[in-house]
Length: 503
Image (tube, rainbow, N blue to C red; front, top):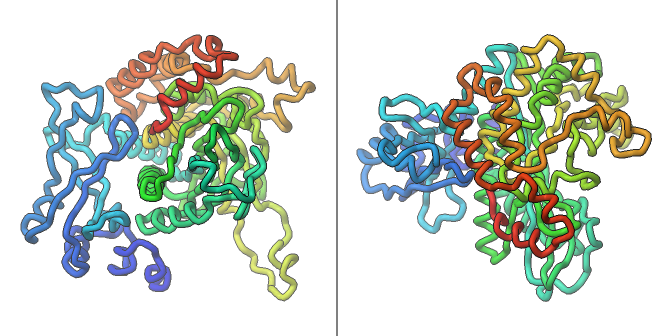
């Protein structure tokens, strides 16, 4: 970062210390706390339920501050993760200085940091979500020589009483990129974006989404905040904190906010699409001469092979599988394509045209010769807001790595490619040849069990973690639930209510 970029950064620590977050040291943290009258420090860490947990420290002297920053603190692992027994439950939570931000909600000036888990021997906890992602990214780099980068599309609904917003009623299910006053929560979204940026989130843009309807006296409005591609470990941290920000700000305003995959019958649910790209020496490897590269197609093949098992990390409760149904802009078939929202993995429009569109739109400009290849990604469309973010990105890193380890990757990519909407009548035969995503948590568990060795390879996912995920998914006993509740709207809505605040 140059000095101007540092000064304009929304994260107060970056602007104050004049260095990128990746270079923060303990001395930097202490200096910022001392010079900015910070009174408290929060440790935050993800638990097995997918939510951030918080431990508060009141800072009364520098010696104690140095102690907690150096040594971290003990936490009860058995209360955080189902796979840890009470008999050996103590874990260490150690802060990662690069994640530090000033809490935008705290009345008392507070600095917050995400933590990593360590075991009794002072080693990273093998089954910790953030360490699993770290191992997955390292294995990807070891095998391919590239960095695995990702970004998420965070979709959510804001729900409020209809009587408070009577005028300029929005068009049902037509909320995509709607402006005010028809979209009621653009200001809320932009305030969320501002707070997320203050916590270090690298945001691409925000907008209102398709879902927009009224039901039983309430307005339901869907919004999305999309991030910029960064190293996958950082991407997971940013998404985790962003969900925390959106919920907290919604709570302050008295709004009900949900990331749930299913909202009600016949309306768009919320996904959590993940874009990926691979870089080497700072260069995006997704294109070759303006066409999708062999590198990208191998990674896609890996995702085609492991997609059914990835639902175990990205679609983690029964309502996830009420979203993954045909004709809802959510995938059900294991296939990929260009600019096609009916597929599982989409290759978005990628600025590969040979024209300078900026000059065409603005005749006074000179040609910029901007390298648009950096913008190309591929997008996995099956995950939703129930996802365990670190494990989802770890699973995707494993799948993309797998594409470089199987000899027939390019053949698999060719066989699973579709050029148009897969649900059209002329594609019936093609549809029959494609694998299907699972239709329940139990089916997802079966898929993961069949392919678990790939996820355990390179010591990425620990066997104990896989066992815990399988047990949790099977505990729902939902193998026939989608069929059982067909046409039973009230029973389905009761299920939606139960998991309304998942992840």
